[in-house]
Image 1 (cartoon, rainbow, N blue to C red):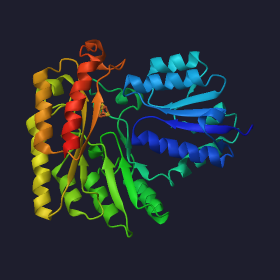
Image 2: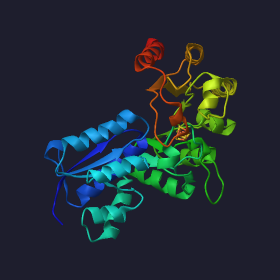
Image 3: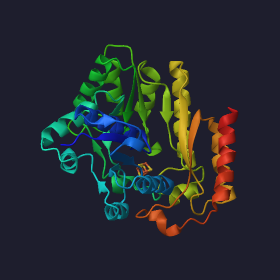
Image 4: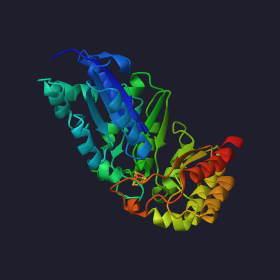
Length: 348
Ligand code: SF4
């Protein structure tokens, strides 16, 4: 095996960041050398399929680094995988470490698998579930990451214990819709996991993301408010303040139901005498979003007072249900709407 200089390029969410940390660990343990991208002969890209701009960045990186071995992993749609293949770029499914061993011509496949697992022990992120069952019409996650699979609670607790032992103070639990977490054997839910983690000895804080508003339960809200080692922050992606747009996005809740959940969070704050920050995600300029629809999102922002918000301008993703709706709202208008919401957040 030839020792290579490598660079790992991560795009997108915390799940990808976590994968990037594990890949860096694996390659270093294999004796490869981390270098800046310019001097790397191996580049691994952890890609994101959420926005076209993120996909374009991967193609740009491939163009600017011809002649190097480039491997793409993460969230990638099938038609992009085919385009990568045409450019001699391999796609690697991170759940199959033996495939990476083949790509890197490493005969000891078990070692690659073991090291990738070991990498989890240095990442402050702990994935507790994978995939998604929801098929929001703008999102390719259920296609790229598959259906929802929760890990055993005992395995998650073991991972967290290792991180605490290694001195991690801030641990982030990850899942696409983490509030629907369910132990595959016992059926225990996220609030039970929180209680068990809170009982572990040590000085640490557990955060969690991302939630689906339809899966947020009273028990989870109470656990966040009551348990001192659970961070007092709930990420509750609203995506739009308009019921019409929520329906078009296949988000199965209404503005009123969302506001009821927020009310429960505020009540829990009072009951346990704590402050819980609420953060959110919004998609700006989904096809059909009129000025009136957008105004409802503005109203929600003003009513709730989010601590922060991730504002994403809509871009159509092939293979998603919304793709056929095109992209009728001009980029300039999306930018204007983005500025309006951003100003509300920044003024806080
Ligand atoms: S809940 Fe919707 S937006 Fe979130 S990952 Fe699943 S399909 Fe995508």
